[in-house]
Image 1 (cartoon, rainbow, N blue to C red):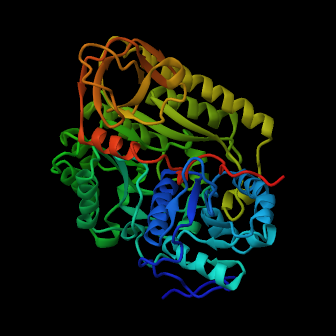
Image 2 (image 1 turned 120 degrees about the horizontal axis):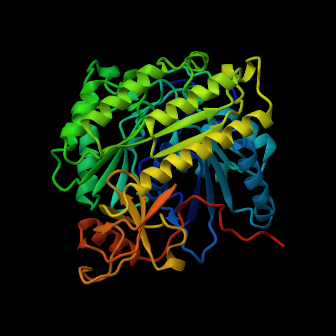
Length: 504
């Protein structure tokens, strides 16, 4: 068993067998950050419910609030401590309320969280999600905060029970951790080195999801292209994609995120020839400058990146590419930035997730010279966003008049109630808002159902289809969503501020 760091206040609490220490207690989980954190929150909900907790209903106050945190962006600390401060008077008024903080920021800050917010009951790291119920029991029994931060993964998170966020789609983790050493990224220090699941375990989880009604799965890893390195199989990821293609009832397979360094032709071939693998690729660019990529310790160059783009487009002309880009990395010149704009132009991304560089303590980039002034970074960021928005809009306008298949989703369209529309994703990952009307509609259109429609409008970040639905297929996913929807409304895993009343 891995020893705990010196600031840990408890012995390891890795037992997650069913217990009743939380019997009847109601929880909410607040999630920050990436898809990995969303998936971890599903695991947290699962281990809590296996221990007798239940998700708080809409009209109930929770007995437990869990913050599953992110440490990637500069304002992550401020966001967490700001939200915790709002709960201080609530905790004073209700001492039985428990507050737990987990995830990447907990792994980084450790007992500092309790120093800053002494009313927090439990702090746990990225490697011991399954410990939460035991730590909560100890905190109640001992009437003092419990801090447990393991330095290495002892059990793959997918061995834990999960309460899935959606019935018709699910995340499946194929690996955790990362072996890369990007100078701007703190994730490897917080999630550890890459550890892969065996293919049979991954496929068994996918099959279980499909049996429960899922039509779509997204395979998750910090670097999915290096999947298999721990068991010595170079083509493991492409083989995994092809194996997913053999699962009856699985209609869509996505994955995130690949690293350009490890992107091989066999993966492109698997994407192009496996019928249920979506022609969508999210591949982080970060910068279009070879000099900046070298400083970032990203082990590829723009020509390598563009060669992958060309091969993907040759094999799948309909593929939609998305990316991540950082603006204002230390030492970035106007020439470096222009090279990024040039690669963006050539790549024709459907969407780009753009970020202004912010130094993260503990990363090499945070101590580099030539940190750029905020106004320079802001001006470049606005130019990049303007260019990418125009590219996205132009690509969207090219789709007007075409038919698209949409897996109807729940909660994708924030204005759906006002517009009488529903929303979902095309096979290419684009967000489509559509009107659920027409003679081909078979009863109510439900999240999890599949429709086809014709695009009538385009915007930089979505498409609109305001004509009649062309086809409507009621699915197992729709049945599963409807069964869940008919149950009392819960607020167990969510992405907004916890809905608890402040003491007055």
